[in-house]
Image (cartoon, helix red, strand yellow):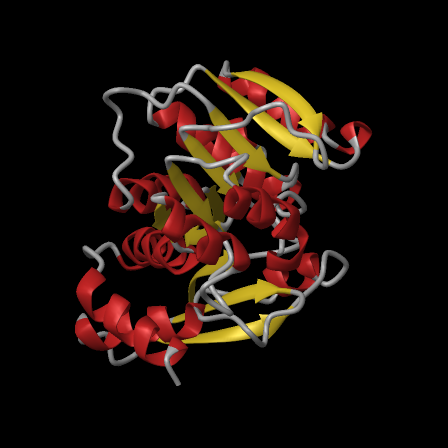
Length: 273
């Protein structure tokens, strides 16, 4: 069976390492997983080319929203979030899922964030598809509201729509002048360089979160993580998110429990090269 990760750019993706490690641990000798460069214009053709020998696809930027109208079935969570990062081929149909949300919840749990007590203040950096998943993740942890720091509120309409579907309160704040000073949870969904302002504020002690999840996994540590650890913040890495969302994908595509330990070891080894 074949599987792949699609996105643009995609050469940097660690997903092949994680999924291939899972196949080896599960003794799925006939399975393969590759990285395919694919933008939104190419996506319909790539999907059409996935015949009976295909198990599924992982999707990254910029495809998580673009794929929705191309699917036969969209899972409830992916529909609420407005983004699918996983396509499973079953019964001749395309099924869309979102494993970013449970991946974020698991990553935050490793940093000590649990459902009880629920995080009272949440600050999300960015307004894209990953930010929508972050909203769903903190809702899953019991948060009733969140603040998103965005550069252009006019481009945050998808995030506002996701908040309405998720029934979670959302306040937008200026990316350069956030109103939150000490959030329980800070989730950065922006590139590492875009968060320097927040790293500086954490280092100065003017914005120190109790918990941080930075979705960037390479290079690591990010400036946010470097600033947060001396401040006493519990830090979850983008690798932990990638690992857990990939594990959910493996289970969806193979029907078997994902070998998390083997996947973690393979991913960490690849990052340490």
